[in-house]
Length: 288
Image 1 (cartoon, one colour):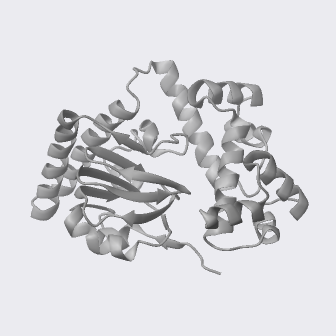
Image 2: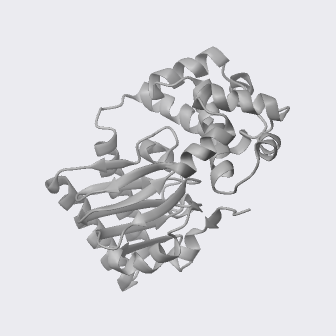
């Protein structure tokens, strides 16, 4: 068995701040260590200015193009594939770092940092990239100077960068009602991530959220264009794939771990939504 390595923010940041910013040249040593599949317990933002590379994020290969932004959220399985020549900046941070200053303004405000945002990658104009880069350069200067109140400055700069990135990933204006819906979906996602191994039905989560299942489903369709059931199933399926490919567990072991009544039910569930049996998916993936 080859378990997925869980990488903590402190390993990469090498400090107790739960935050760090690097140039890609300085981050290269971590890339060498993380060129096998690993699971993040932190958020990561990659700003690439020059040259091309590639990376694997939860079974999808993404190009790292010039003037691109990649945002990884908690729990995603990531692997650097081709990274030696890219030039830019890497930020790593935990929600605790942000929350120390913005207790009532959580990272849930930024939908591109959540599971519902299926596209963690964006290519932007050179002008917009230069603006984001200027914030990263300022961060780097603060991070390396360790002057008085540098932590407060870094939190403020991170907030500004996240606001600007959110405008790029979610360009449409959101009214107050839609913002409330986003908050509900964020709490729903948090609960899914906590209980997906034991709770598989929309009614279970609706009860925890104190709303009716039909209402939760309607909000999910409005905000994510996916049903509440789809969000639950997608979380179960991505974990099943992780266990199948990266940890090389059998279908029976995965069925038990993910709370299915038996192996055959898990097999039918997997095939219905992936068009392959678990073993068939594994063979196809490894062949490719």
